[in-house]
Image 1 (cartoon, rainbow, N blue to C red):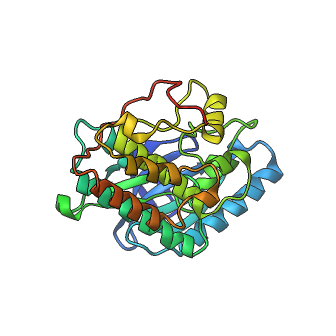
Image 2 (cartoon, rainbow, N blue to C red; image 1 turned 90 degrees about the vertical axis):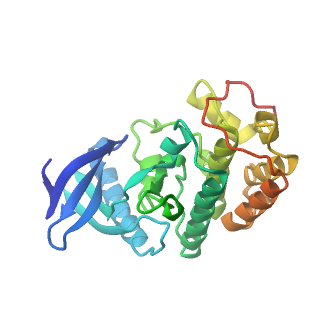
Length: 297
């Protein structure tokens, strides 16, 4: 692929379950952009494909109204053939996922700074009535422009995440491993801002312990864990965390959304306070939690 509309493809940035992300140039104004392709042909039924196409474009256009320094800006939405193209802000850097898997983690103050930025951006979007539905380390980009002190987190895939995570499936199969999904998403009940809070809490748990709170050998077992079992207490996985940290994470990971914090900001305020009570706390590089380590709920 060399061009999408007027946008000139420069290089491939990555591939996902539904398509490819490219770095491209908008020659009209000389701006570098990222182009995410959504492969609509994965839906075999023509009527369903048209319905999803319309919803996708409508949601992406709605997300384009979001203007926040910690949200990747959507510039344009195009359609050519069986593909939809989302034109968005290009972020020079890498994902939070790669950072957690790197040889060394940033200073703990920087890690908390990134999570606060994500929570601020989520609360802003929630105030506009927009839920992300797919918060995970891979969808949090870390801009590396400027000095280390100037690095910032940016949430990607607003407006299109729910189609990739829920609608764009074949034969009822699920795309990707749903480690970050909330119980209400899995059960098909009402999804609101508390869903993004649950997913953010999974990210925070993983950052602080080096392990995902829910891990199983297969998807059905994983979904059961998320809906029915409590994860191991964070302080048991990482002894440098105090009990208060575990209690904050436990509340944000509550199965019942009503038992979680009122907002993502409230969750991060409580987590930051709890971490201050554990002055020796340190994050741990990502590692896989052994299946079966969850305690029964």
